Length: 234
Image (cartoon, rainbow, N blue to C red):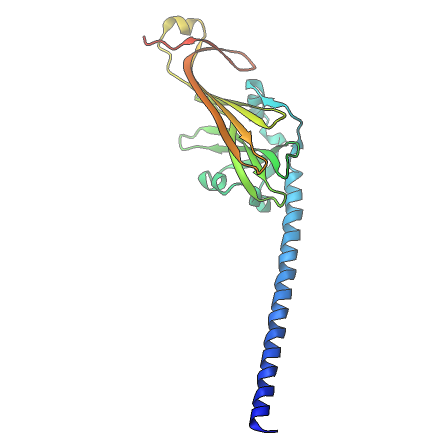
């Protein structure tokens, strides 16, 4: 065999070996990716088991919000590997939070919508309770999220309502100092009421479509607050 033939044969062997190695690596990578996808899918199914199925329309008025606060332990805690399916911002902003699965809403287009409970102690040593509407794709990837109901006692309250067309209303009540003796005697609360309306798109985006606010005196009962009159400067 001449030198040219030997060199050519040697090069062909190296090329064949390289192709074989590359193919093996590719196959192994595909197998690992497939195994990872399967594991993630099974994990997402487990995550969804933490939520109770809920029909629409659905609302959490004042009474329901305090029920959520007082009976938070009835909801399954989302922790360990299931944290994967929560928005990073929620985890990073309050690392001491406890998260719990609340409700799984009816399927909408190709997205999955859940209500997640969050509880933590803030820098003022105050208990903060909130819930969030979170949208996922079919694989569990977080698409978007929006804070809805919640409470900090004597500071603020928020109530929610979700309609069959996946329009979402949020009412936030923030306490104001009441200097009027007459209104105090009448047991009126001085509040800033902020109203938000959101729509959920078929791609999973939760978009604000309306916002209004008013400051005034409100009557309260178990269901919520009723506007009485505007706040006056005393």
